[in-house]
Image 1 (cartoon, rainbow, N blue to C red):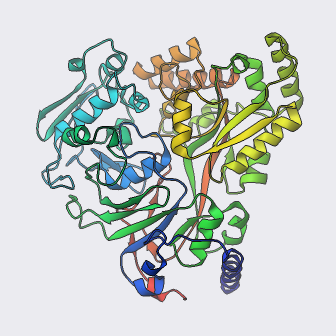
Image 2: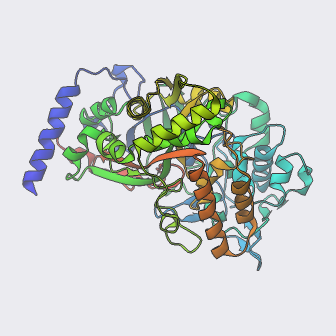
Image 3: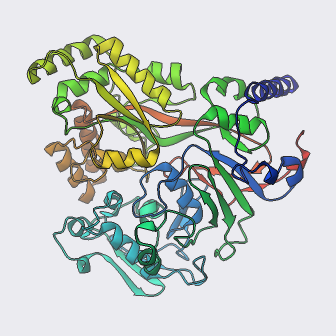
Length: 554
């Protein structure tokens, strides 16, 4: 054990030396080095220092779709339920588990007496009703709405077919919320912890309009923390919410989060003792794997390719399949990622449960493979059907962060195996999302995060009526199976239908899943009880605290 410790120390020293020339923005002063708070001076202060890859595009829970926004919302807001360290839903704004009807379609929640917003006003049942109705408003066409569709008449209201008054949500009084579902939904309590189910204050949303959730002062908070600083593209700061109903549990006074788009710079901060945890670059995983600072989490997230079916080129099934078959997923995860991520076997990751609590992936099997020769043949057949002899030059949209290395691998695969030229278009996440929502892309590399533990959370991206299906692939049989699976009470049949639905989208190459994400980190030993979650947001700071920082070697 002593030998391993020596090796780890040498690796840290070497990495710190190699990276010492990189420029840094201080995590507290956002660039003002005079405000730096070195670890040796903080001692046992409950201050956590972190890095993150991207600025959250929005903290409007009705419109948020990306992981960066989910992460912040999970720490500054709270729904009826909160996921605990075991990813199980526990009462949060609800004072206890709900009363559930015998047919499991009606839920009655009681809001906590001491649930407050950060401006001191009480959290009311009406705040949930308003937020959910706003997300479903047919005039707004918000992409987050699909997760609310289990509610009675939610989908019909969203589609403009029924009035708002028919929705199955009602505030019986200020503290009592009743929710009626179209069908029994075993994962409903887990869904209640996701962003679209968070409450919102009508007066605040109306006051700030389109500015709501775009900076720290245009919203109010009801979670363990508030945002006390937010400088876009630089960083933000969590500060303990003194008015939070369970403030006694929250030990961190603040957490400073610096935005660092690449893992090398983030690692520099870590080895220089400017941050307490860091994503681990692929090249350093082996070096740190045996040390006590290494952590790895299998995420409920699938990296996939979305084809823009508005383009005639991608309306051809054979061409879509060709681009998918030309990708060696084993080489991608083992030769490029090197962080424990697993090659995708289908749209649904291997950690997602079926209706019986078993792994859905075992039911559905392996639906991907690599075959460069077949890919070339399908491409030629597809182009012949389209009446073209050469493929167009394509553009791959990707986040402007470490994902560019994935894009470069894909570019080389398509060039070497298919002779297709692809340019890489890196964009900040906010601009990338906006372009995709308008259909302004050819191919897009997407990290799809499951919002609840059910195959439907991943298959919804292929549903033609879903606003998150921005590639506009559609298949009537797939839609029929998805609709049937939403309402059936026969869980065995539901599972079989979802297996069939996934096979349809994979056979048709509606999208092309690449790999299931694993995230490798290093974290200082004095950071305690920082819980990382496999589904939805990546982490929860509610229970985190610092212990023993002053005992660490300087």
